[in-house]
Figure 1: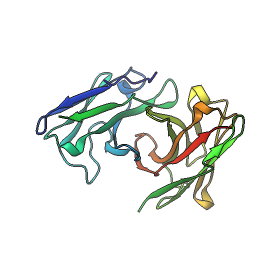
Figure 2: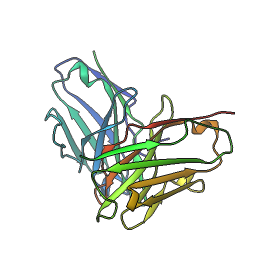
Figure 3: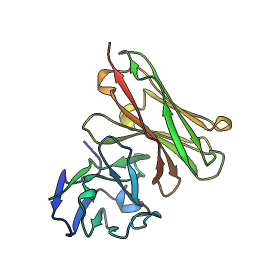
Length: 110
Length: 120
């Protein structure tokens, strides 16, 4: 059971926008930065968003991050078939003194 | 260029101790704010955080495995070692190390992972 809650799957058509939610508590999302990762089968995760809404160099601006209270959201616009992957949110939990992650969301681009 | 590479046995027997090494380059674990974490991912399952070690030798462990894990570093060799005792078939997974930034807690560079199977 993951500390952060993500929907198991989301889907949308090419060109559309999709959002992936990540729900936590005050001790994790509520008081710390959130990061997001993309993972293709058989490969290591890749950083998509850090500090809740910042994109590393090389990540297109189709990817965006935001946070409200104890929930964070990853947005992906202009969906492409190459975006089909698993997406994870992560943050530090001040009460647990540990990193916590979501259970992952599988994105299907129909 | 920052890189990390995991190494260790591909197969361990139940009850044995697993020792994994993360060898990195492009940064130093003597630099303030630098940290390295270990993760694992069982087949078809979600990523799981295991442990973190900081430049100042502070260490953190996931609660559920705390009694079985030990993380250490050899900054002169640019290596971080994770040991996990009393291995069980449920510990079969791909193990990853990643650089993590203190305070912001995001993993900006990951190793490619090493797969460990626990079987007699």
